[in-house]
Figure 1 (tube, rainbow, N blue to C red):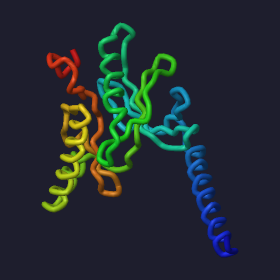
Figure 2: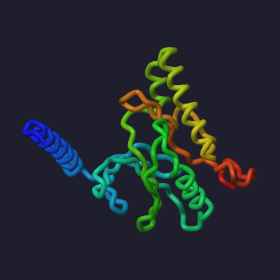
Figure 3: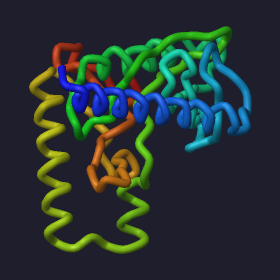
Figure 4: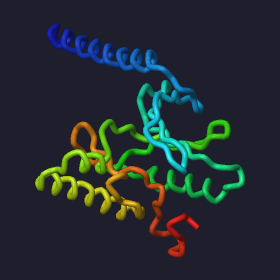
Length: 196
């Protein structure tokens, strides 16, 4: 290897190391609201009757993620099963227009789903703030239709597609999230929207 190639390789490694250090510094210097298992809670992304979704940091893998933490009473076994079923349904999906699910589990009394953090806004917010032009709308519809077709090919039906369940990233890419009512096509067809 030439001296020039060695120099370029060393510079690239130094830049990568510097970027990783900056990422860790930002995560460590940002206030933490609490912890769920190994995840550091950094902010609330949303909340409702189901529980909360946090922007969290995973120090083990050095990345931000969205951590969905539902509120369940111990006797709500059916809701717990449905929540875990959501995780199983989505876990195998790998598509650029579907928010990736990293893992699910339980830490103490808290169940969680850890998924890709998409920095951006919901499609509902985008439409409310400024309606996209026809070309942008057509591109987003195409991308979302391809993602849904892929999910269907994998045997998963979302069942709750709406602008609030689509994130538009800062890169302009739409991504489908919240498969809370997802259903495997091979499941009993009598299953209701409530997972019954």
